[in-house]
Image (cartoon, rainbow, N blue to C red; front, side):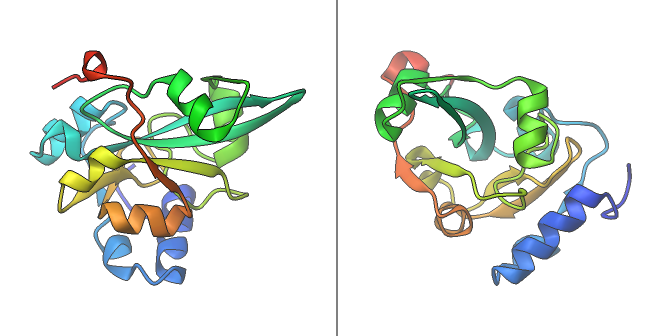
Length: 173
């Protein structure tokens, strides 16, 4: 894939424009290789790993109901599922399998964008991303990213700002 014509990328670009974020849509980049990890994305972009907004989809269990939960986390640390459960009132939060991720987002793991999904997904946005003037997020495909800001991530997702790591032991940098 070498163009912005991929359906998931086009859908994200349209959603960004509709949300009044044309600069982010215009900034979508197609990278030479897939960047399924924050470290790979940071290296490809020449930025700190903490400036990468990982889009992690979880299965949040509330009684007998399972709902998707999107955590936009700084690439500099890991999200703690117990913290996410506490923040969202879920009985349990666990990683989602690729089929669940695609069903909920319409996108593949490694390329999940913060928005442009079939339905709005409850989202938690990592406060650590506020440290960066520019944050890079996946644009609907593992070879695509777009520049945005912490404030715009909150706006575009309707997300809740929160610390998602539990202590310094979760810090990767």
